[in-house]
Image 1 (cartoon, rainbow, N blue to C red):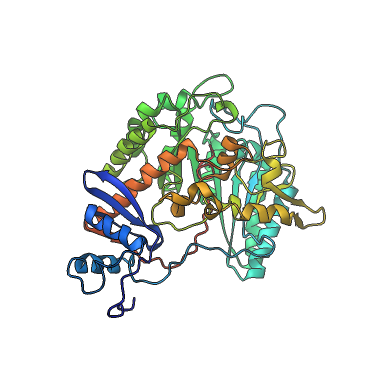
Image 2: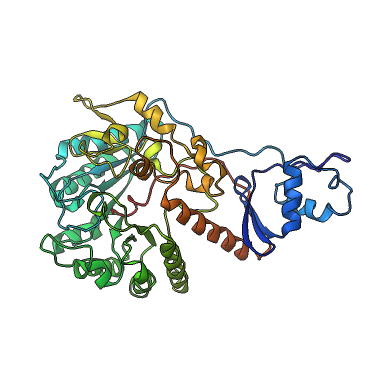
Length: 476
């Protein structure tokens, strides 16, 4: 940063947000500078003067403003030149090197809040030849782009392991393709972790990781994650987690929190941290769609309070509890890959950009299904739909313009926004309050960890592609 020119008035050079904390204490946050500090009314008034161009009393050399101005320059909030918002570069057509396969809509559970209402209606299964075509496409893209790696993810509007032949045959085929083309392969599964012994042995021996749906304490888990006969599934899931730990198998846990389970969230997180060793634990309020459509909302202040307590307990075990849209320090225009060319294939061969739109009967399929197999070994894409999805970035949402969390949240889940507002103008959701509260917590934590005065991390690049979301990192 160049020194200010002598005699020139200072210039505000950052988008800043002022968040009241308590009497005469304010959190000042410049997201694009990845900078924040806690200040008093005096510095807030100084920033307001700079914003409005009132610089008579704060020009260079004015004794009353020197110390504060130098501090603000250090954080690149003053006299640092223009900021660079997040950006992304898209190919004319998608060229993914990762494929997600929605293997089936069948499921061995009937979870009370399942967004997909999995297991209802006639099950649809992906045939092995369709899965192979998806693998061929990403392998070809990896070779063409000079990449050394491709990825295969097994997901679904049900439990992927319920289409066991396609699951195992596809991984074997992907390995052969990796060897033939000199590529590295990683393969993951999002699962409810209710496996037979044979299946569990195979998962541990063959996959690189798993995202497991588990709601914590057995009694909490069993209240919602039940078999078709109404029996709880916790015994099977906890057995799987113990096996994963014994084998040092990589996995994360995704907790779905109903309104009734909020008071037990901290105890559930304590239980998981004390007994298992996941790489990540993520907690999300239950989604009011599918079987959970008429359930009481869990997107409440009570969830925020419970999350804070649960997070403190997790940290006591050296673990971090996460919430998908609270990620201070991230710079992105998009919440997830749904608006960034995600390549996910439905059992019938359509291409979806959203993990929650898993087949053609999904209510929002016309928005998120943007391609299909061409019948000749390739894939065809609807460019108008692709352009529309790519345009759904946070900087185009008028509602989000004044939100301090927008550049890290990325506008939150587009699918959830549509579920709330339909095709109308976005006007916020109950999740917005959770996002702001938890993002503020993260910023204050970063300040504390940096010494208690300020936090400042110069971004290495203003590009962020967020591949996952709260549903893929877990299989809700």
